[in-house]
Image 1: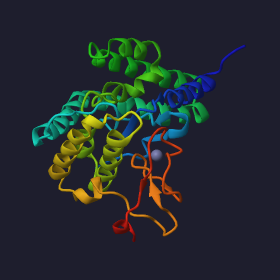
Image 2: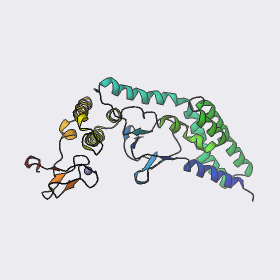
Image 3: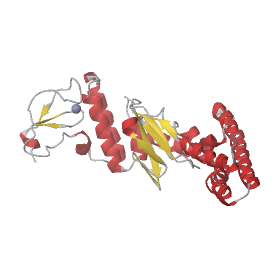
Image 4: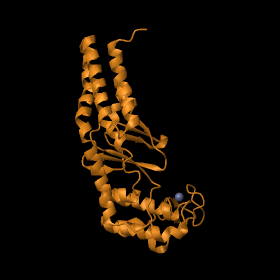
Length: 283
Ligand SMILES: [Zn+2]
């Protein structure tokens, strides 16, 4: 079987696209940047298939645009402004570190997704081979630039050129993993999303099946500090929910699902007792 230059070009483009899949554990969240804002949602750079636990990342990144953070990374001591500034500084540092890769990645991305397809369709075999050579040369330069920060990745980039399009992603995607997840939320996400995430996290840590009742007050105190640092309304975060209709009588304090019974356990959160809506919480 003879592989034509055109087929080689198609293979490189497809491999570059397939290389973008990353596994995301159920205890992790994906934070992406779109335009100037961070969000916990898909962007043109990343599609998060939550149900099957996979993230697909577009093969062109010249700055940190995607972080995978562990939801289990949570601090318990007092939170202050310096910690939030430390998260922002970590993002800036990552941005600075990958700056030198940007130009080579731009040339390589244009080679893979513009030059190769065009010459494979309209050009000669020689043009395709020159295009592939350009992609391989860029991969080697990226491997040299990434060394020694990414020893294993650098070797992979040199031997398998399509993977080098993800050099920035490889070096930054876990860059905030060690930071307290609540601090990352407060430092990066817009107010509304930060409030929703803080509320969900506060409830799961305070009332979840694995929560420690003795830590509840510490979690509440820390959450209040984070709320204050971000300028949010405490009632929106730690207040009990209001019933969505007169029929519902109770809610799960962990996931806030509503029930038409007054007592019992949440069907989604094993062992978590339902809380009745009080007269005051009626709409
Ligand atoms: Zn529940």
